[in-house]
Image (cartoon, rainbow, N blue to C red):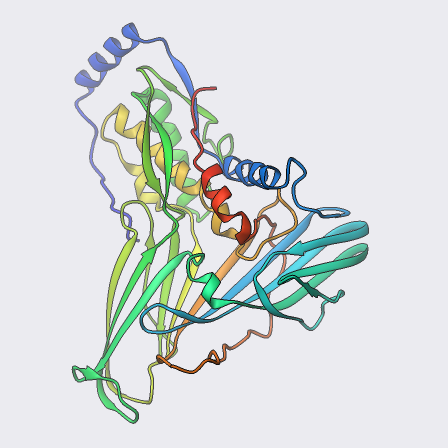
Length: 393
């Protein structure tokens, strides 16, 4: 994991007790609500309503929708996407009519095998319309406009490849050196509360948070021993910080896993160097896989005083609350569900051709993970609405 871990024992107990006594005498206890993914969801819904005069987007659904997406990107060495394809699966529950749009810009859409409906393309948006008998499975391959997707992708990646210290040429062989630079681009300014907390609350709360994260789950306030709110025994300050959705990555070279890590917290960049001896080909097969990930569990082990523990708990929960922003890329019609997207970046040789290089489409697009998203046309509004101030109840 790339998130820095500070495993230190807190300040001396006597100093903590004195500090807590002084703070308690000077300030009444207040309850501070912890950040939740529901804050992000509500911000998105408000953005939809604001854009459309309180109505939100036009859609008809007989029940909840589950969504899974695989975003396939052909990436030139300088980080420019030359092709972006979304493989999306939607499962609708309930009996009744359905109608909704998946916003673009979409250049082309093709149904996938097993889809019970046929997608349409209208004004660069994908339109689904039909009747559900209780279980409707909609699956399609969406070809997106790469020039419009460059700023939306959650990660920037560049590749510098050399053979024996020289740029790659056709038919080269020798020692391959790869320098891959990664940047998590999801960081947004968020106002977070900071205060002196109660160790009696913070120690078990951080313990529960660590257990949830160590198991690979996403923490939610009010679940698995994590409280909905914690007590502040000092004045609450609101500090604006850049908070990113944590992204786990793996890098495969020539079909072998060569590197992995997480871009989150204060470590939003990585410089990965990989060497392959006796390499021979026309272009290296380098694949970067990226998935939204819970925060690093090591953060929850920090024990450095009541304010640091308070800030650590709030920060970790704020990072987890950002995950809905990258959980579904092209968008789901269900605004209150959950969703998952996985991202696969394949580095391709730089080309001046106007036709984008092909991307391999997986045979099984995957299904069944709960959904939520918004469209690129809501991007600016969502970013503004997502700057949520988690303050006192």
